[in-house]
Image (tube, rainbow, N blue to C red; front, side):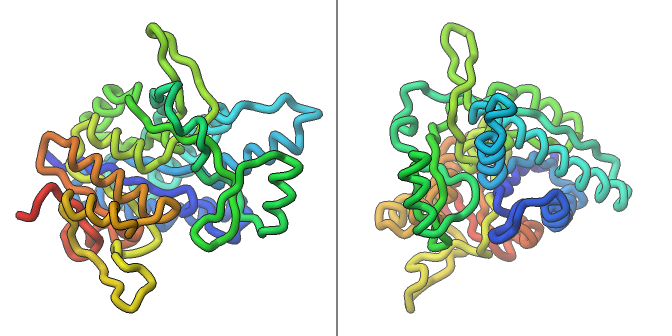
Length: 317
């Protein structure tokens, strides 16, 4: 059977730093993303695509605030669902067009995905998930004072609003997603990390939060029995001692090494930390010799062939 790959695309790859986030900009950015995904399909891999929505859901909240006198505002979980649908639509268009151009008989399906979280998760009390645009220090002070936003510096690029981010416990649509992949479809799911819901006595209810896309992707990969989790980022390989004279890029990390480097603080929470931790969780939980790969979007095919990227494995072969 063909290997199944879960590809996690960041929301900042769809709206890049400094862009306004117009549909033209997002569609153009997605051309590159989708070309690399279709490369995997063309090489025979079964693919599920997940994506972030940090910039997009932040923009939706800004629209809410600007128009709240005229139109009733939506809750954060509904804004997440809206952006999952709109990004899924843009991805579907681009992927379907490129598959057609290459004469690949593969259909594309988007699943608006619900993720169960614990209503007592400490993430509800300590917001950490950045959303929306970047702000200056002066703007941050105004937003904290006037809007009561919780703001955090984001990787040296400015300040962003942060919201609650509980850990995902269960992908509600996991069986449907697995069935769609088994039927030969390219599936887009877990948009924005999935829509956070709590479950009490069999009843689901949405909650105001944004789930980290990398943790949701790791859980999805485990629950559908994926062979590879591909986490895309802005660098070709993970490095330790980043920015120092002794900086070293890693071709491979075992679970033991990943835990050690994380304990040393090599991977900050606002940067590479969640990706390495999500990779570790997937490899650790998988019941097969699975691997997680962290690399650039346009390096995916080469990374699958072990030519680049950082591969996280249970132990060295």
